[in-house]
Length: 171
Image: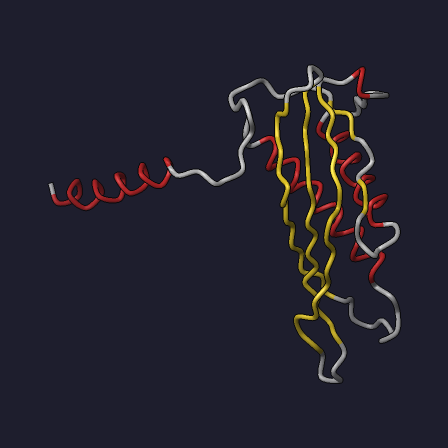
């Protein structure tokens, strides 16, 4: 039928595209996801002094929400350990208001991330995990009011969700 002839090429294309994979993957994909993940503090190799602590807190909070509050007290009590380091932080002005002040920024964070099972096997590794977030400066604030702490917290929450979603997608 005409409909079948129309749909068949699209189904073949979808099948071909689904066979393609990105370069980052879970090692041992198909394994059972660890129930409890211990988070080592994320090392910070940027010039933002407290960025590692802010990012660690956000990932820990997201892990707690996903595990319904269960948090292992140490790596020995966890199914896996998540560790990493923040290797880059950059904020770029995207748009300005009529007075020439930045009102929208793109913030980029790059991290090295490693999820290791209790037995030492690497479950997930990404040496170039990149998260981008657009942050808009709220209206009515003075031009010299520092928005970076609020932007970092919003970025950290989005980074945590993105990171854990990426890891979970492989299970």
